[in-house]
Image (tube, rainbow, N blue to C red; front, top):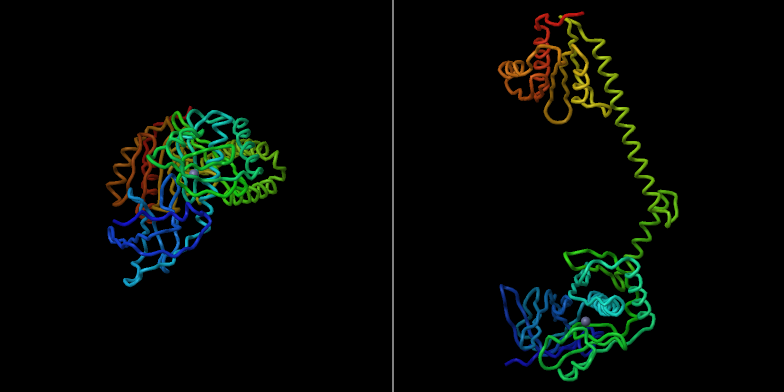
Length: 411
Ligand SMILES: [Zn+2]
């Protein structure tokens, strides 16, 4: 039987390097692992992710624990066979970040409990997010601000954070946030005078090392609230990023920080007005273009036959131009465009022109291979395989209109 691993990270969470005896080597799914007699490497557990680092120069990629109290170091490659002792060093920046977030979580949970009577029912910590879950809907901004004031006061007071093992009988006499989930000895982490929590994680020496704590978002999830927060270095980097972004925004909008939301509201309202004006101007321009094309179109059998190939422009599109053209009486319009993709065509007629565009479509498809399209009796549209076929299709559609029996009476 291999004895349980001595947890150096409990004895001194600030210790970063150590030497240990190699007790057992193992392998799981092709991944080499090793159990030592003692370690600074924290295994994933209690909401806190595992440490990384190196063991005898080999990267430690994962750390787990088993029920017998062994810490298993999972390695990028096996240790040399003849190695009885190994030097280990943890990634201190990663660990210290987790200690800041985790200690911040204890403090924030205590403040939510004491100020708003909301117990923490979930905790999640990863490399890029840290959250706690509370029962009920999100507290309002004012209540959340009071909670953060309490947290900031406790940070300024530099309250010592200590961890101690208690027997179960001793532990249940402490004002624990929730009953201990383990049998035997209970490890209780205390923020002096403020909080007692059963916890196996790594924590700071005192609350001052949390530095700063901010809530970034409160998210309603069913009948619970997920509070996203940042502590220590994460809060600092977030603060710098927000300052940079708001500085750019206030410079861009020539306004002060306080007036930023109102300035953005005004800008959005102006944008809506501009969009309305552009839409109206487009309609007017499309109508003017339609009238110009009708005026220039050949007039036969009482019908103006418009034939036009659109230049690419942003002022009107083919469909709105065609619909505007056939909103005038006695018009047949044939339009084409060759932009990106396959060349497109459209043809339509006014309500008073007795031409069945579906008949034209059928004949068009029969005559020209590769032309596709669909539509109604007064409006058809489609594509041609290439520009030459497009021109043939447009001429054919125009010819159909010239064949129109003289049915429109000019009165
Ligand atoms: Zn903890």
